[in-house]
Image 1 (cartoon, rainbow, N blue to C red):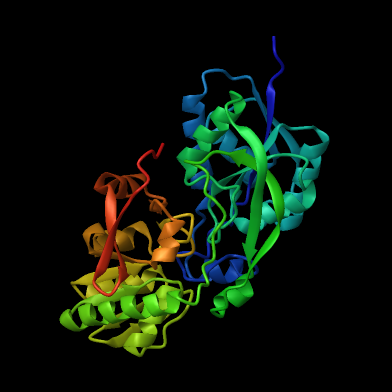
Image 2: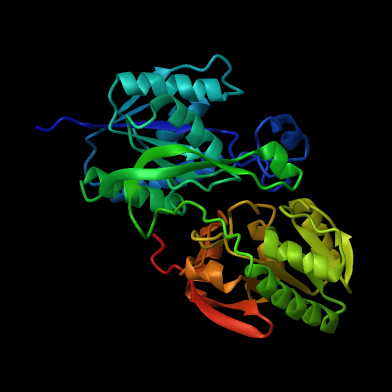
Length: 382
């Protein structure tokens, strides 16, 4: 009889709470996020992954090593697992910290777990990495606002499938980039992303996202001008339409062409070439969508990863997307970005909505002045 596999599990219960309320992260602003009406999202994301994993695994020869209460124990029990060993108890059960994550990891390292499965964002991944370095592989269930590192599955169901394949010795372990964004600067519209190191992750091309690629080619400015000119023409035709502009440099360029005070990393809104909303959160977007009956959303994929929704723009929640309509989403990107972004992805947190995009099959992406390219959605979503 073979020995049970040992899996460490860490849940960051506050991860991703700042997304829908427009805070672009949760680091140091948990209380503010709660005051704005933010609700926990990580526990449900973790539960979705664990329930799916339980369905996939025929055998029960897994020992779970986790922290007490909200840091892992509660969700494992809710998912139906029984072989759970508590290795760490947080001092404050209601408000866990990075220090708690790191101490739980130290215990898991001593107990020689095979892999650490965690639910959170880049900040959680970094906290784990600072403790275990390259001594253990890690796999992330995406639930933060910032998720640029190569340790994350593309969605919770994908995490379940990857973990199963790992336990069945179908995947190899390799070095992946661990990245994080300075949230304080991010909230001020400054994009400063840093490579913290190379962690051990699972190598799988379909269900693991690659590290974010940053494109800064000078020739792209001319292409962005062309894209912006085309979008300005479209906006002038639709004077009674609410245009919601996503985040990123291409969208910022469009805002400059229109003549508005566009936020680089926030969500803004325009009607009849005039700005009617800046750095909007989910509630503010819904209020505008109630006011204006016609709306279009303009977004750009994250380079290499291909996500147009669910990474850094959680303000564009499932409720917001449904009010806009999938058919009213416009994707824009420079050809150089698309060269390293062969597929598009979404991870809205709503499986049915995600499947709507997958069934659609593709999006027509604006790549210049009246120039379009058909780009497929990832079809093999678990």
